[in-house]
Image 1: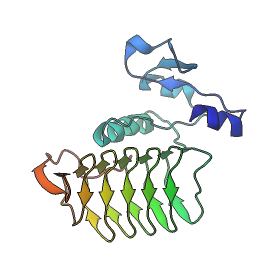
Image 2 (image 1 turned 90 degrees about the vertical axis):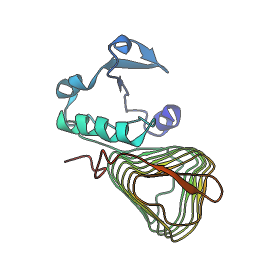
Image 3 (image 1 turned 30 degrees about the horizontal axis):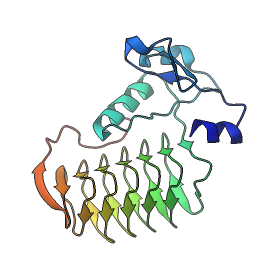
Image 4 (image 1 turned 180 degrees about the vertical axis):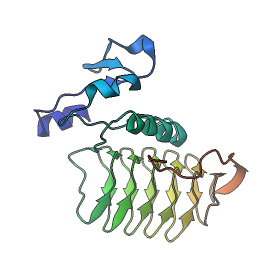
Length: 206
């Protein structure tokens, strides 16, 4: 991803922030790790932008981006040059990896992350702080709430609604609407439990 971005925009420099103090001053993939979120006020400026690359879970992604914004960070998008954004609406703080296919009239909310090989069908709407693991396939006209997590290789049939902060298990095939905070697995996907409603929304400003 970094290599492809550097080839298309060679004048852009990169650095990582990580809240783990042990990583400060190290090099990761040829890129320096400067320190944690507390450095944001020192790094702000007209040509400095931030994007959250956390993909572990949507709650951590949402909370960390809020920390960045609260510290004064101006967000940008990190989108692989191969991704075609024709007739697509993308928020801010969005991370799109290589091989992502977006059909007409897709909407992707702020602070969302879409991994390599995902397909998002026409007229789908993704809320804020949504995460798609590799090779997720979402058919057309699906409405995805804030903070939803899609496991690797999961599939969603068309014209369904996925409630906010739901979790779709790896390989699940979703054939019906998914309630808020539900965890669904299997083919066809079924609810196995509900997550505690820690967050009401996935917006990056409160």
